[in-house]
Amino acid sequence: MISWARFHQDCRLLAEKLNSLGSFSTLIAVTRGGLAPAAILARELDIRIVETIGIKSYEQETQRGAASVIKGLSGAIATRPVEEILVIDDLADTGTTAQALRRILPGATFVAPYVKPQGACFIDHFIAQFPQDVWIYFPWDTDQDSLYRAPLARKEGAGV
Image 1 (tube, rainbow, N blue to C red):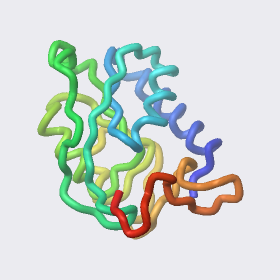
Image 2 (image 1 turned 120 degrees about the horizontal axis):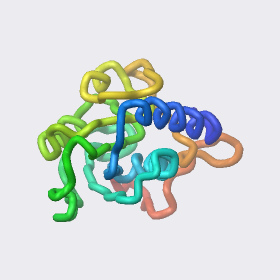
Image 3 (image 1 turned 180 degrees about the horizontal axis):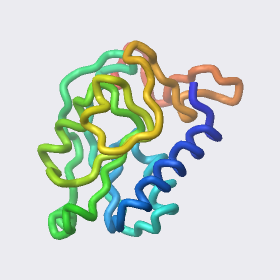
């Protein structure tokens, strides 16, 4: 389990790394996991253009599937210089999401605070790597007692 303190610290470390690389004008968060790190990176890197793209690659929390775009990018992103675009997700697990995004945004910089071995090669910058067989619980997955809590909107037996 990753605590809020560790998550924030790792996102700031990622921002420090990116700040030394140059200037990014546009941040694209992969929903839903990329939303929290996007808020931190946008603040730390002073990025004001923040967009989302919805990619679904999990059928349920522990069942991976093929990546499908469920919410595309706005037309305004096409006018941004690709070298100024930063794409953020919380984790590159198998790399399925990152591969799909690289087809959509070739030349953008892809980052995540965390990776697993299969996903690491699809991410340009990250902070920590976890074993492939470890399921990572993020701060938004747990309650104050560090117990996993299913989302409120989930109906019994329904997928994510």
